[in-house]
Image (cartoon, rainbow, N blue to C red; front, side):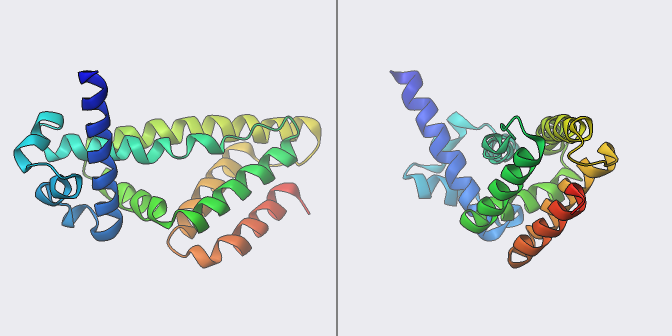
Length: 182
């Protein structure tokens, strides 16, 4: 019971920090404010996260976990690609804070090895799934693409449109058209 309560409090702190990062970026993230948002004393926060860096690492893990539901599941490669792009487009529309935080994480990863490792882990899984999907599409004749370049194109497009969400629809339509050869 105590462990569950601690895990729940820890998750509340991570979500509060996530919201703060979405609002003010990592540079504006203050532990006192996160503690206040959850209704605890600043010193109590340190029972859950020894350092600000530990909390930032947990925010990175929490953020990347949000993407685990966008894996292509359809056995038809073209339908799976469309489904994946549509899921990402919906996420951009419905969860703008998620993409604001991913942009912050990408910037922070350049100087923070903990964040860089978490993003690399998430992107490795994403690259693996996209590679599997694009390879299957080549094998089925759904398209003929350079798999490695196609994977990077999808990732670059997603990372680009998170900064201009209004461009997501047309950009993903063009991406789908390029990959599907339509």
